[in-house]
Each structure stands twice: as structure tokens, then as C-alpha cells.
Length: 231
Image 1 (cartoon, rainbow, N blue to C red):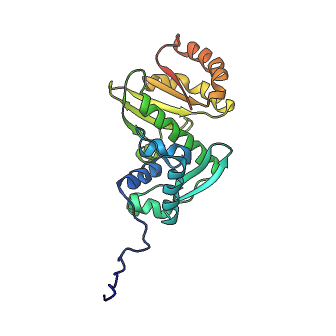
Image 2 (image 1 turned 120 degrees about the vertical axis):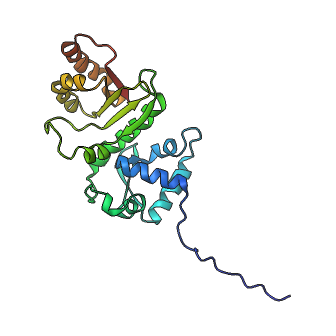
Image 3 (image 1 turned 180 degrees about the vertical axis):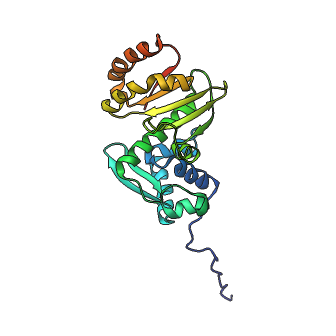
């Protein structure tokens, strides 16, 4: 029997991407960073994949030059952010007006925590209202090139809820950051029907001691305007 000559696939050696990959890469580009441990929820919250499967997905992205992964915080897993090649994949270069330099690790840490908060808030909603749209810090900067008040903290996200209200999200991972927010509470309360303060579990008790007293002073009550989200 004559030996059958096999053809070499034209795309042999290429990295294949599917719609799920493109969705995830675009999401990470918009949020700027994510913890590797949170990727299963990003890809499919209904059917989270295993840690080994996540590693395989990230390795495929790395091999394609689309993301970089680095260890930053013990027990939090690697930080993932898109590379310039990854940005070119999800958006045309002339439309991307954000800096192309890779942000420092501490900046990535903050952004990854915001990504984790977004996944949880979108899953659970806010005061029985679901999230229709999340406006990221990156997008907020693009839409507010000249902020009215430069001293105000940048929002870590704006939420458009299905009850027609808008919420502002601010993440704090140190007591100093929480203390700094005191002076902005009245302004934030005047501008947004709901304020979401995101903090780590270990800071919850201290946050309540610091914030709720100030919130009562500012608003006259500690009602439905302020929500604390634990990550």
C-alpha cells in the first residue's frame, strides 16, 4: 500500500483564540488587571474551570504574547495584565488614548482587586438592583479628560443599575485610604444615590468604626446610601 502523504496545516504552530478568549482579554484590558484566581468567574461564573485549566488558558495567552503574569501578593495568585500586543488585539491603536507603559505592581494590585469587586458586585447586585453597565476607571478617564475637581478621587467604577440609579465604587485596601475618604463623603453623597466602598474582609470592623460615624455626621443617617462590599 502506498504511503499516504499528510499535509501540514497552514496554521500549525499558531495560537488559536476563541470568542471566550477575546471577551476575557477585552475585559482585562478595560479593567487593566485581574488576579489569576478570579479568571474562572470571569470566563464562566456558572461553570468555573479548575486551577490547572486556568493555568493552561493563561499560558496560551502568554505564548501568544497577549498577557503578562507576575507574582505580587502571597496567596492571591499571579497578576494578569494585557501587553501592547494584547491591546492591539482588542482595540485599534489610534483609538487607544491611554498610556501604553506597563503600570507598576502596586497599581496592578489595586486594579486586580477592583476586578474582583466588579465580578462579585455584578453577580450579587446592589440593594436588590442588578447592574446594567459598569464604567471602568479607564473608560471614565477617557470620558472625563479634564475632571472638574482634580482633588476628588478617581472612581474605581460607576454602576448603572436597573432601577435607573448610578452608583460610584471606591476600593480601599488600607486604613489610610479609608480615612482619606472622610472628607469626600458629602460630595459623593450629593452626586451619587449610592456609594459602594469596597474593602478586604480583615478591614471590615475598622471600616465600620471609621466610616459609619462620619456618614451619620454627613448625611444625618446611615441608611441606604452607603454600601460596604467585602472582597
